[in-house]
Amino acid sequence: MATFVQRGPLQWQAKIRRKGYPMLTKTFELKADAERWARKIEREMDTGEWRDTRQADGMTVKELIGRYQAEVTPTKKGADREVFRLRVLLRAKLAGLAVSRVRSADVAEFRNLRTKDGASANTVRNDLNTLSAVFEWARSDLSFTVENPVRAVKKPSPGRGRERRLQGGEEQTLLDACSPGMRALVIVALETGMRLGELCVIERQHVDLKRRVARLLDSKNGAARDVPLSSAAVAAIQALPSALRGPVFGIASRSATAMFSRTCKRVGIAGLRFHDLRHEAMSRLAERGDFNVLELAAISGHKSLSMLKRYTHIEAEKLAKKLG
Image (cartoon, rainbow, N blue to C red; front, side, top):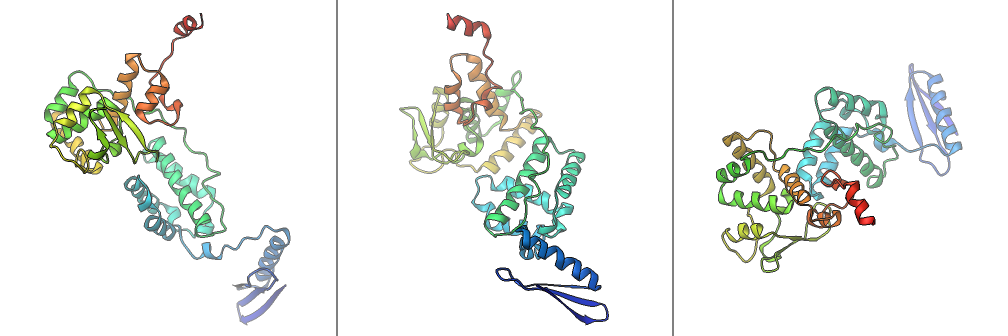
């Protein structure tokens, strides 16, 4: 039951004691406000709707993000990218709110401002997914009894994937400008369609040049897979300084990204990112016409066949001939 004690001229303390619940105390200037608060809490206890939000009341979103970044982000493969997104969230207006006070309207406002500032649909989706992950972690690992306000917010529709292809003599110009190590990295990327993060963690002892297979233990999807190597990919790897162990290319993905960007700028290749080489590789394989969708997926490591639809265009006439 609730009790009310006057602590001063303009100070009324409401106190709720009920078996099975923690003791709740809150102070108000008016007794009427204290009684109204107590009635609301007791009604929620009666209906089973009451949630203990005291922990979430005492922590701001900024503080929660700080804990998440320190405890969770370092365990992720895409930690660098997530740190960047968390920094965006830390600058948002909602970062100053108590965790328990964030509503879907606050998240929608953040989404709208990001869009207005020119962030792409995919970027905004990633920001919202990161914020959602923070709240889900607070609920599961910190036992915060709060709703995830991101769930009710409509996310921008996914934008079309980048379709930048190498044009004219760009490939040769790029290769001629690369250092030997970067040149090999670019060739293997174009021959296998591997992601930069995957290329940079391949170990020498996991590459069988005779069988033309590279064993990738740490893929983006978390599952190990064998990557087939073309003759050109094998030749590029063989041209590198030989070593029995250690990374094949000996370069971190962040450094490779920076070097690739500088090289493109130096030779006047505009709008090309390293990840575009994966799109180029898969497009070339699909254009050859001698790989089916399952084979393309085995090469690229795509778990979802729908992701490969942009590379494959099955003609109805050819299907009719197969049907007989």
